[in-house]
Length: 362
Image 1 (cartoon, rainbow, N blue to C red):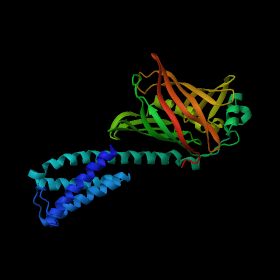
Image 2 (cartoon, rainbow, N blue to C red):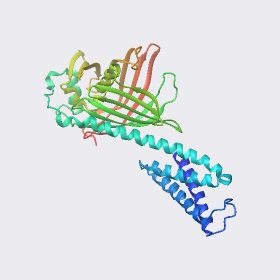
Image 3 (cartoon, rainbow, N blue to C red):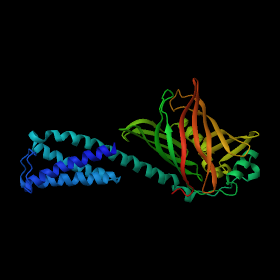
Image 4 (cartoon, rainbow, N blue to C red):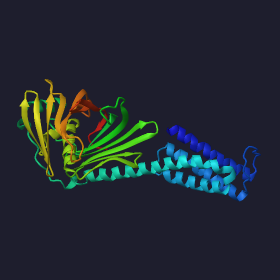
């Protein structure tokens, strides 16, 4: 899609350049039907330069490229109105360019919102009072073995975590094919919170941006088509608050030292199982962690509300680890599957591959 759009912009710009060439009479252009005066020729040149610069900035993914795109369409459409009889069909590529330029603008706004929220996620860390972490001896044996063998037993861990993910997603249980995208997720292990940002193409020309947030005890879920049309917008909802905290609890397997956090307590529920309870800002959540004989994390399960409406029901929500690898000295699950266990059977809705982990959150 990007290449086709860039070709459209470049060709459209070059057509405007022909108008300038004809105006200054550098060469004879017999197939250009418009008689262009020298004065208006410079408008044709301006439009051409705007389109070509826009194509370059769009290709380089400059976040303010949409300014140039809007300027190009504006100048071009003025010229089309001036020479309407001969140039009216130029309005079609202008409309296409305008629509995709507005989408680029909405993407910029969406990204700016995410950047602002990311700042808020870590803003309070400097004022957070240090709280004692649990000693290893106070943890269930299965959790101790997990922390020891993962390399996380001797540390409290960095204050910021960034996890880059390749994400496969199904939006409905009856969906056959997987949608593929990339996500980046930031965690605050000091003051429990996270921000998750997904860029997903469900069709060649159809893009979805999603952002999940857990901040100061409040959860939010936002999904927009082309960063413009809301598909999901859940917030100020106790069910979403609880669900996002449950997600934070399960996903701490990517920064295992969180298991010793003062916000989390543990209870042994079997030889290789332990129940974790987390409390933060008046919200409580829990889940069961399962490990193998070597102390590797294998599964997390909790009872989670599916959605936030008044009729939302709790269903088992499960994360299963399929593979592990070492990142920055810590062994973590690097291929996970997430499923709901619904009345009609299991629905595997996500496959998450960990591409990289930065334990300084950069």
